[in-house]
Length: 373
Length: 230
Image (cartoon, rainbow over all chains, first blue to last red; front, top):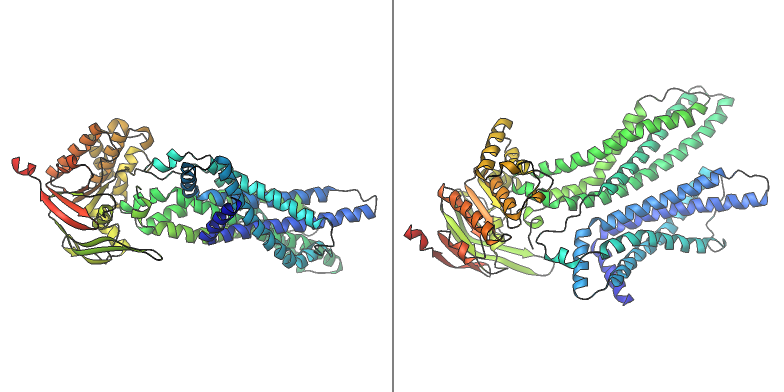
């Protein structure tokens, strides 16, 4: 039976290669960052054990929390993309139930699929850790190595990450989709509509906001550095180096946040395109051009991007002004440009991310999306 | 109004080629009421999609209002469609997020009609369909029969020359089915051309002519005797 689960899982993964790839790479990056931070935490703990008295554990808690949040977000994005095509999968579940599948069997099947993807993500994340380690060492001023077997915690750690991730990402699709009632998905002439999605939209808006905050931070600090650089002397030299370190952290976090926001946005696009496919089909039957339909998607996504920016700007301003720039010895006001540029940049990146999927949805032939069978 | 010559439609997937329509020759005159019948999978919906300019045929000629349109692009078809064709579906296909009023208004929006004219036309058609008390309801708050009335209202609000109905009574009980047929007949009497796909011989009786499709081609065409008695 397990062989069967695995066979179906492999076929499903192959059938949606694009989705699977995006899912695996998004999760792999989350896991890689998580592993890097765990390596750092491990190193710090060892350091502290060797030199007693250095008691401040704030950073350790902070970074552990960050690692967990990043992994959690990657998992949420993964789940959202997995369940975005819920209508299609729920029909499959309906058929399986009709021919005698029990709920536990279906749960096992979805878990097999999730664990298989997590396993691929784990392999990819191991490669990513190797690639990112030099940059991470430069950033943290450490000499961490990924001597996988030399460190007694690595292997159990990896297994733990895989298990936690697999259970996190597998449980929602498994329990959500296995609860499908066959009569509802098989008998109705209409496609089962994936309703709502407020949580998905909120989460993605939140992720875009985070990306905006880090982007504004990077740009604002860059401006401060530029200001210092214009009159360098010995004293300023040391400040410059310290502040550049902060900026580099912000830049890396921006990249990470943008990548994760794109991952989330992609999953949301697939969800929205599916959710609105019937509506768009009707609109096209009634004479809407492809451009009219695409414009509707465009408005919807722009709404979230603008909301995310409006939420992020005051927070970014408050945090930067109070936590970072206030402590800079030579500072200039943040000014409007970091905000404007971050807004434009996130809009462009977001629209590139949603563009292909929404174009595809806008180009779909209405006679396919309105099929009554 | 409509003429097809040797119309063919093939569906090709990776390995299989399916002929959905084969050498279909059909002529529908302006003001006619034609019913299309046939078993499941005979190509009825494919034919209706092509006649409704939702899809292009693989080959053959298709004259719509005396213009050859079989090679039209999606955009050209959308142009023709919104000006000339109204659709009624078995599953109503109303937009759940829009009210009755907004659903009916939609075709006029895509025709870029001015607001005052839109308002007047929508109100007029809602009144005719006895939907005024329901105009601010959402589709899910209506019965099947009411939803189909909204769909008919939406199909006729732009006063199209042709109405295509894909089993409009398929999801309705007999009373509501009769009601929809009465509406369709009224439209026909007012001069609209109607092509209707149906499974029900009783409802096909309402048409002037019945076209029987089987395995993608037309097998028989009968003139309904009923017409001659009137």
